[in-house]
Image 1 (tube, rainbow, N blue to C red):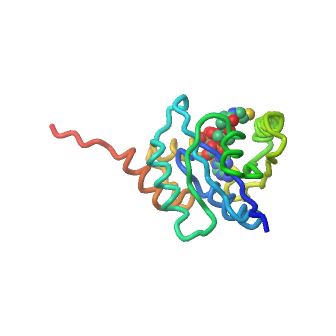
Image 2 (image 1 turned 90 degrees about the horizontal axis):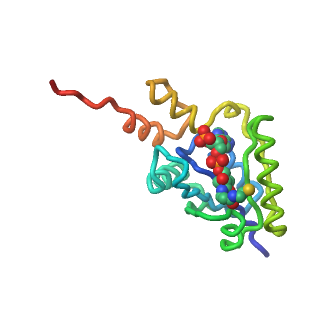
Image 3 (image 1 turned 60 degrees about the vertical axis):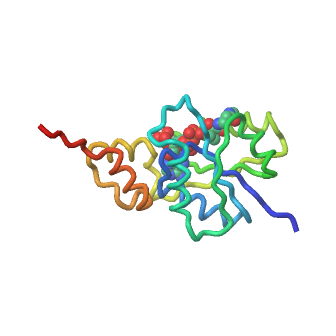
Length: 166
Ligand code: COA
């Protein structure tokens, strides 16, 4: 029997509970999911790829069928290289649609063998994004329940006020 494998790509700077929701629900469709962290130096991330990978690993600990990996270059090339049949994406709101549609069509143009599968993001996460969570955390907002515990802690560490000793 063939194993159904999907790539769930993204920046994950950092991973949120919205991403975790998509991964957990994706596992009801796919046998295995590779979470592919895009190594994109142009995006000026808050967390390094290694930090993002470690947070994903801690957040998904105990869930079987998951691998965390990094990639650069074209997503369809990476999917092909990993033997995946599908790209998994979450769709939050109508505002996501145009970008996702464009990307899915481009990816199909680049490789017709790889299908893009969309899952609607859970209602609880419809308004979240990594940037908005980072912004709230930066100014001391309470983001409990929006991100895994380990991410909450890492954000606190990043934005901890530097003590001024004079
Ligand atoms: N819950 C909460 N937030 C979510 C979410 C969910 N379920 N799904 C996405 N988001 C948020 C992310 O946190 C991110 O927020 P931010 O912009 O504030 O950081 C935003 O939605 C979109 O990010 P992400 O899903 O990580 O996608 P991306 O746009 O950063 O990257 C890739 C998309 C990696 C798939 C795409 O850039 C890619 O494939 N690159 C490789 C190059 C390539 O092949 N290009 C050709 C494709 S046409």
